[in-house]
Image (cartoon, rainbow, N blue to C red; front, side, top):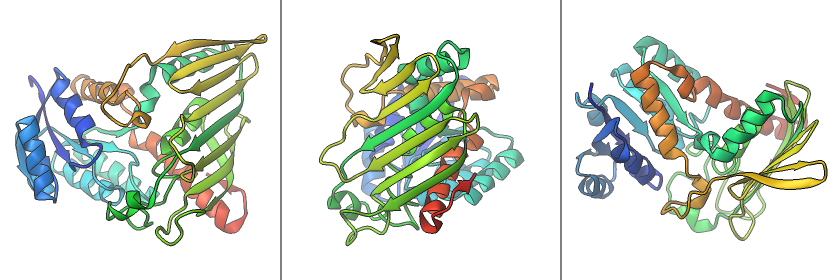
Length: 338
């Protein structure tokens, strides 16, 4: 196989990030795109010189396709992933892997039956800053993790929800600020902190209760497997999209991820030890700049049969379990074990 043939399902806002990464890779070529909106599919095909479909089944049945990227609304992820796997294709899914845990388990079952690879887009794990923080924690140079803090203060207005046709509803988006805007932060917190075993949290809707049924604000205390404790706060009620802040309080130092930089506070000094240095991007800044890296790693994983370079469904399910636990805790007032 010279290059992997790729289909991208969904030509919405994140689609160009994937298409540019596919066409920019030496390991792949873009065979086709698909979207139920004819104009979107046609325009993308013209821009990227590929075939187009309005039915995703036609795309996954295309014999030239080896890998399917799923960039559709949340509620469609699981069904499309299962269909693509059963058609013999490898699958890369935009976050979230699914709305419900049961759906993620169905993807795993289809993966095992098809013996194909499935990856999930938590691209911020591959940021230089995230990789350096993980390296320092795993090596023990900063000592054991004692606490993890994550803060997301972003802005979403009424148009964001009303123009999409699927956002703002539990049946189609699966939630609000938790599953959409802050899921990357939740993933990084549990990945860097060593996994979460229990949660106590709360969700609420402060601004757009007449427009959306999902939460725009959430907070939680997270209890990690290693005894560390975390605090998390996220809202879409601010007036702008501020940089996400993640702080890891360790025995020998404090690590702080903020505004594409990694700071280390130790012995009374604070130093920046890693910087994305990515320059300007034509995409939304809060998406991060590591999609292409994640996609390249996924292709390498397929070609080299290397699961180590792929963020699996099982790993991606951890954030869904945490989100589900926050909802349950909010409704019951109880500590929820994961």
